Amino acid sequence: MKPNVDGRFWLNVGDRGFLGLGRIALLEHIGISGSISAAARVMGMSYKAAWDAIDAMNNLADQPLLIRQVGGRRGGGTRLTDYGRKVIAQYRAAEHAHQRFIDLMQQTLEETGLTEFAEDPRFIRRLQMRTSARNHFHGTVSRFSPGAVNDVVNVDIGDGIEIAAVVTHEAAESLGLLREGREVQVLIKASFVILCEEGDGLRYSARNRLCGTVGEIQRGAVNAEVKLELTAGRTLTAVVTMAAVNEGWLQEGGRACALIKAPHVILAVTD
Image (cartoon, rainbow, N blue to C red):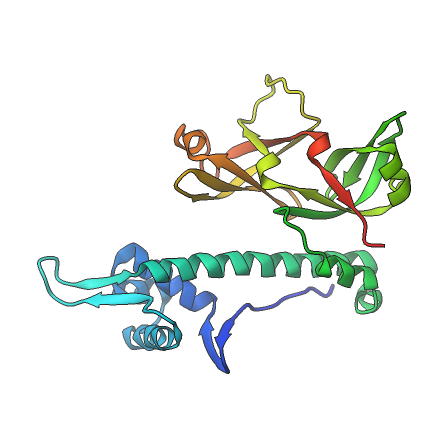
């Protein structure tokens, strides 16, 4: 049986558990139904256990996450506060980063084997890299085309997904990119990713076209963040206008493609 990497993500206050996946799911269900009892039934827990969890969260939080409304014309209920919704969003963002960490550990384990996994310094250097680009992939140079001024470097980020980058010849030489199998980090800002409908008749000038399933759309006042799920567990993030989302063709669970110009792809190495 092959080993696999697993982990649980919790936020603690002091030495006390504050937020975990179960509690976040409970908050989300209460936000949908407006009812603690209904959320508890969905979660398969007792009403008392749900209330105990809510009390624990409210007691540890800087501000109340939930407010219980008793009686009234609509018979009372429970609602999330603005702070509660913010906490949920922040937890989900941190959970996503944690899952990327787990996925990277699993990838390194599969690439290097169990013995080398704990001793491979390249893995630790990847984790320590900090960048403002939302999209960060690890891959290897699969092919390249040298030019007089600029070179085209293709990077395989897994499962045969290739991303082409245009870099200056000087940069390609100094980073050692003109060598197949060279390990490299691929950085793409979310604002550089253009989403379009999937179709064979579309003509475009961008060198990179990656298609997948729309996993999540986080709507904002002006822009929305769209997660495009590729193969091999890779996720590409794009920032689009709300006007584009409101057109209706971008739907969670639907298909879409990402267009990325090769000069907008940044390559980096850790050695």
